[in-house]
Length: 215
Image (cartoon, rainbow, N blue to C red; front, side, top):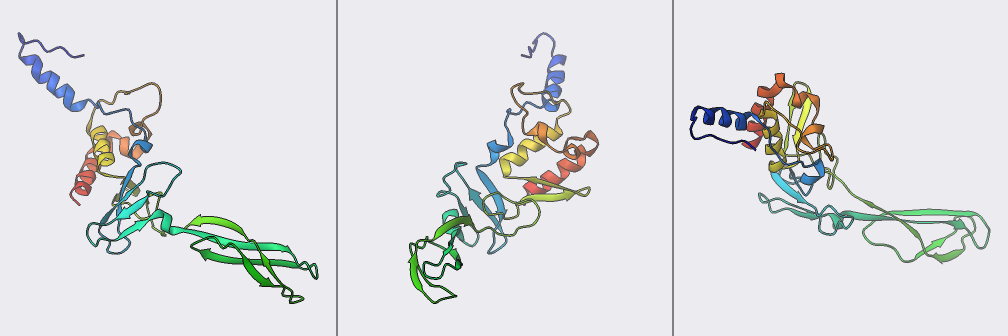
């Protein structure tokens, strides 16, 4: 704890300078910021928000664009491949049929053997997967859309998930004294790439962040 003496006013200036240059952010990890992602809307290209509850249940994961009112839910992008792979009951030849890209599970498939023509109804096996966009650069992990906060700095890609993530990185970069906030784990800022943490790049990084914050 820093004690400020009222009998020595000159100490106040040194204390304020110390506060200015000392990083005192929270001991967060990257996952702490992975509840919200600002991305480029796939419809209009403006800023959209992807939200998630960070759980195995993806039913609440969604994308909302306030500019064009486009909304997508992660659960609506779930698809199933229905496959029947077994020997024909009549001729013994292999039946191997896959019906791809189904929005719902197919309970039964009626198929004719391509060798003997025997028709049978089968219960298919389902492989589940989710459709994603083919975004380039740094993307969100839910829809794989390009992050809104990203730019190139000296040949390196700089990015942040959301405004809070970006401002915390700025606080760390701008501080000249970077003390560890905890000894229990490695924090988000400590895991930043070296080109971001390098003192020689401080001014360039801060300038880039301030430009992103004005987007």
